[in-house]
Image 1 (cartoon, rainbow, N blue to C red):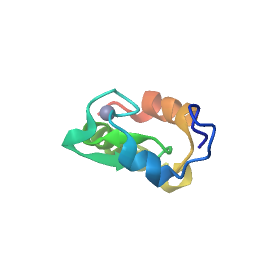
Image 2 (image 1 turned 120 degrees about the horizontal axis):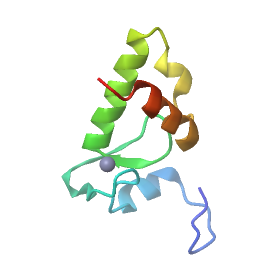
Image 3 (image 1 turned 180 degrees about the vertical axis):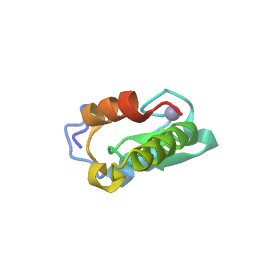
Image 4 (image 1 turned 180 degrees about the horizontal axis):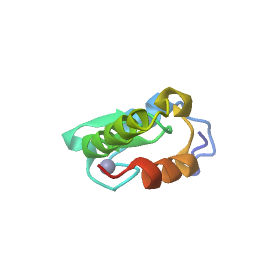
Length: 86
Ligand SMILES: [Zn+2]
């Protein structure tokens, strides 16, 4: 992804360790961080649990979550709406 400050391309793993806040909810990442399954966002463990719920609900309704790995924030917003509820 392109860093808007330096205009240099940064590797996702640089972003991974340098991020301070969850890209999705803004929570401090000091408590733990992980890479989103659905996008390149660095997210907190709570958001990761939410993604697990979405993946479980997809499987329950016959949708293979593997097909949506790295699908990006726009598609994720749809999946969140469609499969986010327990
Ligand atoms: Zn979060």
